[in-house]
Amino acid sequence: MTLVNGIIEDLICGMMILFMTYRLIEFLRGYDRITPFEGLMFALAIFPVWSAIAALLHFDQPLFYGIATRRNFYLYLLGPFVFYLLKKKITSTVELRKSFLLAGVIATIVFYATWLRVSPEQYSDTMFVGYNSLKGGYIFKFIVTITIFPLIYFFISYFTSKKFYYLLFTLPFIHLLIFIRQDRSTILVTLFVLLFYFVKEIFTHSKARYLFNFFLGLIAILFLIEITDYAPSEQTIDKYRNLWLTVIGAETSESSTNVRRIEVIKVWPDIQQHFFFGNGDLSTRWQDGFTRIYGYFFPSDIGLIGILYVYGLIGTLLLMYQYVFAYKLSRKLKPLRQDIFLKSCIYFLLISFFDSLTAGQTVFFPANSTILIGIMYFYYFRQQSAHIRILKI
Image (cartoon, rainbow, N blue to C red; front, side):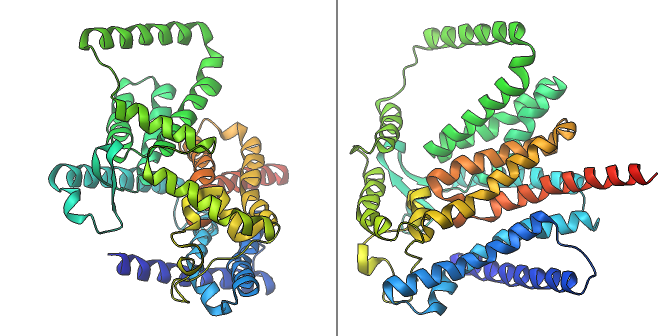
């Protein structure tokens, strides 16, 4: 399965590089202009080369290996590709909305079916199964990112339409996230963003009514806790205690959390030594990669610090600028913010940003953010085009 996924990723990356080349040729021959969003995205194409040069300078790794090991970074070009498809009316925001929701629902059904019918222990030697005693032993490491979009969309739809069934639609996704996948950082980030949406978009416009409903809900929850005699297990308490201990840099009782802490300690001297431009990424096909130097180490394990290790402070700031660009864009899209799909993309992007701090989404899963920014930019592009047409009239 990993081999098949790798081949598919390589094919998509190749197609995206061809697409970027095609767009640049269009621009140079005067057939079409490059928008600021496309210019920003195409400029990011230098980063696999950046990483390769850093690894050459600091570890003597040949350039070929350095570029090859970061080749999946070019998946980020799916962002300008989606924008181009929308601009040329090859697809539409309606079709994208349906595709995102359908993909999330299908993935959720598959995850539930797997969880109910397959024992993860029999696949314990694979990459998609992990072990954590605090999470109940062996668990499937489902990639739940695809299921978070429907959760956000239905959550926003409920408060926009006041139709209760939308709130019911969120329950399978919440259950999957909290009780099956059990990824603490993703749980906390998602719940924080949903709460942020509620306070910013709903509560502030009707404080008295929602404050009353909040306390009514709180009383109902306390009543349920009382009649069921529920108390969180020691394992549940330990899971989130360990997350806090990791944040403050303390040792925990959980081996997987301690491993990440040890990874940071191992690489911190090299981060300090090459603070501005980074150390680059090593290929496992060249002298066993990082294993030869640090033992167990993957930059993606340590999130933003991993990005800092690979690209340094300057590279990290340049990569994270896409979120500054998106924030400025969202400010210009206020007249369109009642569009539920657009609003869902904005809040999903906020989750991607916070996830980058712990999992390095921006670099190690780059398409997650750029596709959403591409959709947002299309709304802005369409808004500006309509404004120009009005002025011409």
